[in-house]
Image: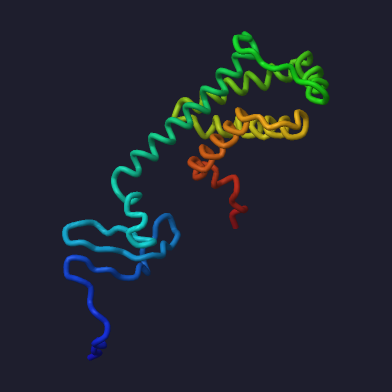
Length: 188
């Protein structure tokens, strides 16, 4: 029989804290401490009580509301700016230099009209929760082109496109599980 050294105190009876060596979630090992309280479920404490608020029941509600708000704002932005191309209800500044030459080529060719139709479709898909990953798939290249247009052609900071890129990145991170197959290697 093995004796416990006297200098190590045992945790209180109402709360036992031990190393998590076998909890798996989604196939990945989670490291941290598991706190067991009498009459409560186990909770994973990664850094003590510092993040205890995010382990509460309010955190998923707040995150779900944030996801809904950001996804809705992003979808509305693409729908509004897409319809603005066809109906012109918002005033847009006229580009100059390389940006004006670029717009002078893609507007008469009908290319920008096709992009705006895809923006409207992607925005509407983002507004519906069920087809949001498809909207992300459609809007991804458009967001990259908007950022590149601002950086390389306008050579100016555009707060609207920066906000759209940030919201898109957030939504992409939230829905990243839907794109696992794209980044997975070939099956053997």
